[in-house]
Amino acid sequence: MNLTELQLDAFKELVNIGVGRAAASLNDMLDSHIMLEVPEVRMLDFDDMTGVTDNLAQDLSCVQLGFYGSFTGMAALVFPPPSAVQLVSALTGEDATAPGLDGLIAGTLNEVGNIVINCVIGTIGNILERPLDFSLPNYLQGQLGELLKMGDDDQRKKIILVRTHFTVLEKQLDGNIFLMFEAASFDALLLAIEQIHAR
Amino acid sequence: MQKVLVVDDSLFQRKSICDTLKEAGFLTIEAGDGREGLETARTGSPDYILTDLLMPVMDGIQFLTELKEQGFTCPMFVLSADIQETKRKQCLDLGVAGFLSKPFKKHELIEAFSRCTSGKDV
Image (cartoon, rainbow over the protein chains, first blue to last red):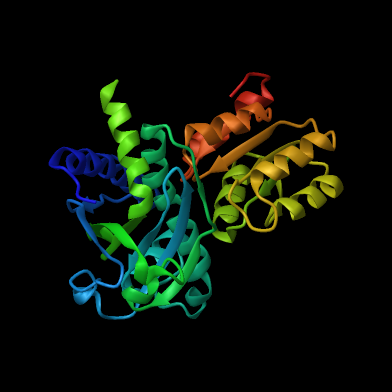
């Protein structure tokens, strides 16, 4: 499947709106400005993550959430561990060096991931008028290639990968939002985009 | 004092919600999922119920449906990260008094309950 320039542009715009809404949510939670970079959209085979994971080689903290319905995929909110600690500290009011903070990280990040990812995907679903369901958020730590796995048959999958990097200077933290759409369900997404544009 | 049952699987979120409601003069009781919420609703006799949607064991939609079937008539609110219109409509069809989006703003949460206590729709 090849995307036309128009389809790619429409999809990017949709993602931009969703990510913008997610940034507004993070802004509300942290009361700090969120700097967003332009989302990078790539179509690739799942087992060809080279280039995506290269500059994120260290262990990372991640909340992932699957979505399914008219289109299927997985979204992940990914932080370098020091950023995850800063974020949880900022939200809970606990000192970043407090021994008890570790116990709060998974639960707090799960809720943050749930809110942020629902904003991105929910906004896309709302605009396209396609209802979606979500899995429960799942907190993981590890290498990016492992964190972004969707299932046992990943190697056979073609995916549309969206990556948006964000920075919260005031809180000294940064992270990435990854969206992965299964290409097999991307036709339905493109059809929905075209139907909305045709109105 | 009026009592609010807060149902959310996130401890962090429950604490934020309960702190806000307590500041506004409500008593709060808590549950971590819909099933626990049903039990706590039965034993705790809340005046209001506020629930998340995406939860393990029993999700918010099933929880609201069960409450309705079991004859609970107290005003119910949804506070969810799911911002889809279809989900909002599904909740309103189940008779909820208000649908709020996460992350919540303190004044919006308090206003929702205040409007309800003064008999107005949210």
